[in-house]
Length: 230
Image 1 (tube, one colour):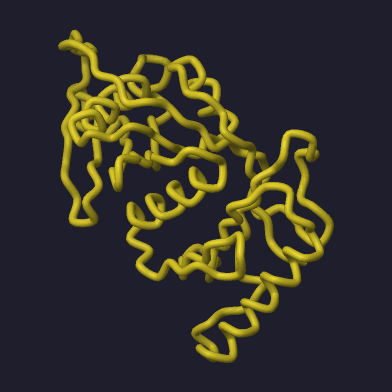
Image 2: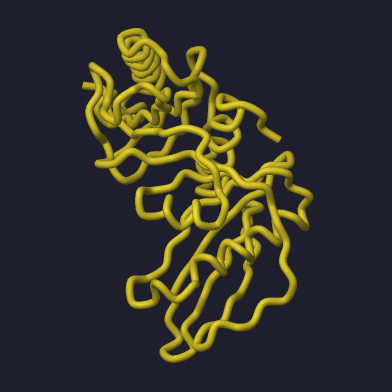
């Protein structure tokens, strides 16, 4: 179980990479983990594990690592302009990229935590069924299907490693929102995490998701933003 901000960020990063099957995950300069993404216009995502680092030092460290990667891998290494950087913020930092960085995503997000909980048998949600699939990565994916048209109405994924469950990709299609589906998806994940003896759950929430998770008892560990080096 992660006990501090740095440990929680590290656990989240490794779980997120495992869910998305990003197999190249390496420690880099002190205070960051590099995850090779190689899709969506992003070569590498650097996840900074310590809030409040000096922006100039951080920018220099990332550029040095990227140049080393280019030298070692040539064209396959990508370029710094194709890298993203997830930066945790201290309580007194403004919600904007620090000097030397620019937005890669338009909003601040939140690393959040909760303890796994179990509930008794819940009544069905009329018009929907839920199913759990075990993935080759070791993750589980819970899906919600509309009985009216057979379409997937919602999905959520989680992996449990070393007592920590990392949740990723919680989505409910627009026509099916405000029906309690996201909450029920999370209930299924909670139950699975408890069965796997997890003691902590982690996720990164968007501004829209944060309100839902807070209503379910999730707590903020730190704010994060996703930036590029300029």
